[in-house]
Length: 398
Image 1 (cartoon, helix red, strand yellow):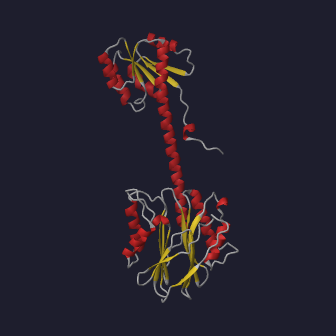
Image 2 (cartoon, rainbow, N blue to C red):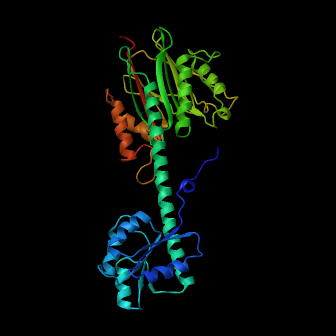
Image 3 (cartoon, rainbow, N blue to C red):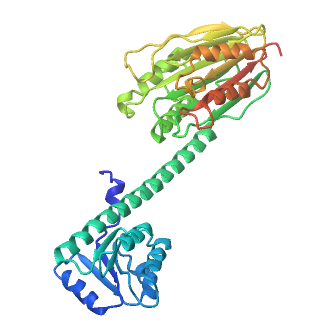
C-alpha cells in the first residue's frame, strides 16, 4: 500500500468570486467577463448589509467590493470583512470610480489586497481574480495539510502512548526480601525499545535482564516485547537459561536483524544463585551493570559482546562474581546517561560513573537521585531515548 502525503488529502478548491455592489449593471458586466471561465463560480450581493452573511455561506476565494454604496460606508465594510473570522484572510479587491491616492492608501491600510478603477478590461479582471485566488487557495491547502498532519501526529502519539503503557504493564512488580527490586522506566517522546524484567527460574536461581532495541516507535517496542516474552516463557529450546551466554547466543540466532526490520538490540542478562551467592552474567553491546558492595566500590559487570541480531556468527561469553555481603546491582540503558546538554555537548558513561560515585553511600532513594541527575542534564523536555533503570538489592546473609 502506498502512503499518502497530507497534501494529497486536502480538499479540492476552485475559484469563487463574490461581488458586493449596489449597481446591478456592474454585476452583469462582471458576469459577462467571466462567462467563458467555466472553472470560476460567481455570486452577487447587492445589499452591503448582508455581505458578511453571503460571504460566510458562499466561501469566496476573492471578494470584489465597491467603495461607494448606500446604507454602509465601503471602508467600514472592508473592516467588517477583516474582522470576520471566515473572511479575514480572503483577498479583497476594492472597486472605485476613479484613482484617488488618499483613498487607495486608506483602503490598503484597512487590509485590502488590490484596488481597481471600475471596470478594467476583461483580461485584467480575470488575471487579478486568478492571481489572488491562487494565493488564497494555496494558503487554504497548506493550512488543511498542516491540520491533517497535526491530526496524524496526534494519532501516532496516542499509539506510542498506548504502546508505552503496554510495555510498562509487562514489567514485574517490585519485590522485597533477601532480593529486593526497584525500577524506573520513563519512555521517550517517540518510545524507544527498552524493556526489562526479572523472575525466578527455579527455587535457587533468579534471572535479571534488560534489553535496548535500536531505533524508536512501535516496531522497536514490539521487538522488545517479543524478546521479553521469550525470556519469561523460556521458549528457546536450545538454550540453558541458567547460563547467560547460552541465552544470548540463542537470542542472537532467534532474532536476526534481517528478519526484524533490520533492528538489533543490546542486552545485559544475569542469573543469581541464592545458595552459592554466584551472579553469572553476559552482555551484548550493552553498558556495563554496576555492582556496589558494602564499601561502596563500583564494580563494572560486562563481557564485551556485540549487539544481538547483528552478526549471525557472533558468540557470547559469561563471567561470574560472588555476592557474600549485602550489595546493590544497577542495570540500565544508555538513555540514563547519553544526554544532550543545553550547550549541545553530551554526557557520557564516565560522567555517569563519576556522578554515581558522588552519590554513594547510596540509600533507597538512589534511583530517584539518578533520575534527578539525568533530568537536570536533559532539561525540561522529554528524554530523547527511553530511561530504564533497574535496581536489585541482595541480602545474602538474611
